Amino acid sequence: MRKLFWAVCLVLSPALLAQGLPDNSRHIAVTGYGKVIAEADEAKVTFRTTSTQPRSADAKRDVDIRVNELLDILLSDLRIDQDDIVASGISLQPEYEYSRNERLFKGFRANRAVTVTLRDLDGLNTLLDTALGARVDEIASILFQSSDEEAHRAKARERAIADSKEKAEALASAYDATLGPVYSIHYQQPQVQPMVVERAMMAADAASALRPGRYVGHMVTFEDRVNVVFMLAD
Image (cartoon, rainbow, N blue to C red):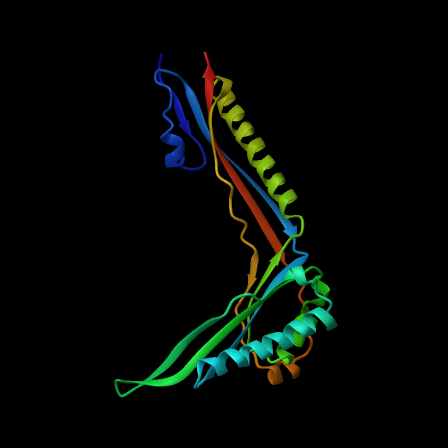
């Protein structure tokens, strides 16, 4: 019997092809694609505090004091849940500058990051202004995300599966063939790409002169795909 093979939509992954397609049989390979676009209702904000001092202990002490001040404000004034705050790391390293091909020691640079998960976007501008007022040096990143991520992932997967079936049935019908059972499925959990606001550095005195900001309409895209090989009935 004449061998029939159709590659549809995307090139199949090496992992799927390596499974070995049946010899002397008819089959069809399709890639199903699904997408869900949801409005963000949360944000993950990372603040960074740095200090360069002649002594490493002084640099560390300086960033520790300022991070502690920020944590007190987050917990007491803004009432952020402690489980939504991560402030566990610190980096400390010597810093140099170069002049006329000579390396000059400037001091020790300490760096601490605080990441806050904000459950209500209405409070985003207040959070940013408050952090900058608490002697934070940098807003390193703002990631918008959805609290219903798992549900949106599942919906995108369902759409990818349905899409693979529709493509296979449509192509089989177009070539006067009958779609048979599934021979193989290759699936890999995709990574969600949250919407990222460009990195911004701003001093507290500069921020205070700005008009209060508004952050609306941010969307998060959930995509999924599945590679499937169907047999064709005789």
